Image (tube, rainbow, N blue to C red; front, side, top):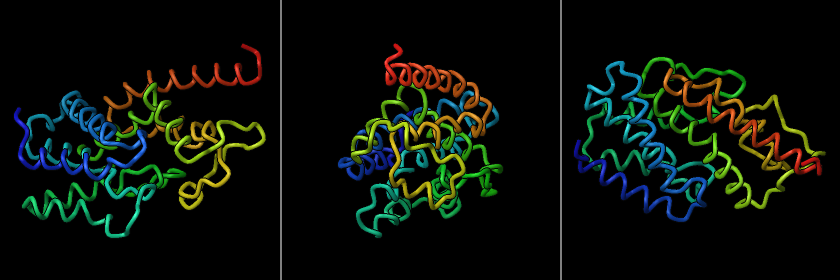
Amino acid sequence: MAKSETVRNAERLVEVMMKGNDASHDAAHAFRVRDLALSLAHEEALGLSSSPISLEIVELAALLHDIGDYKYLKNPSEEKIVEDFLVKEGLDIDKSSKILDIIKQMGFKEEINGASNGYQSHTLEFGVVQDADRLDAIGAIGIARCFTFGGSRNRVLHDPNIHPRLDLSKHQYMNKDEQTTVNHFHEKLLKLKDLMKTKAGKRRAEKRHKFMEEFLTEFYEEWTGKA
């Protein structure tokens, strides 16, 4: 199916706004999440793939989800870029609201300690977009992104004396003081498999999760000189 002009404009916005980010949250990440979300939508086979409106909501939410991310925010005005874009594109209020709601609620920090925001359980659009973003955070690409982000923030690779914070509050998660890159696997990435919303997402997460576990086993053995 041909891309709409709004989708093409969204792709251009992503390329401009995410150009200065490190490779863990660049335009390629947004495009992978979009492709994953559309793939999950078709795999779920629960009506999404037959609804052009739902697919457009999924595609735009996936493409735009990291614009204005707090980790890269340079100016508070950037938080309104997506909203202003949707208005400029002439999307109706209902569609725009669904896209913005998905983006606002899909972050891991909104679900820490099992807290539910209520929105995620009501729309399949939300499920496939959030699952797609989480799939890109685990597996081989997830490992690459994790170390890329840690390197961009000059984080210590690993320190056995710094333990993962396993009972995190939202505030603690957003303030990653004195944490190592490897600890991020335990604080977030290894938890994502069990937080998937769709059946398709759960299936794909199993393989990626196992790959991370195997990687960490090898990492710790090499770190201690056992391998």
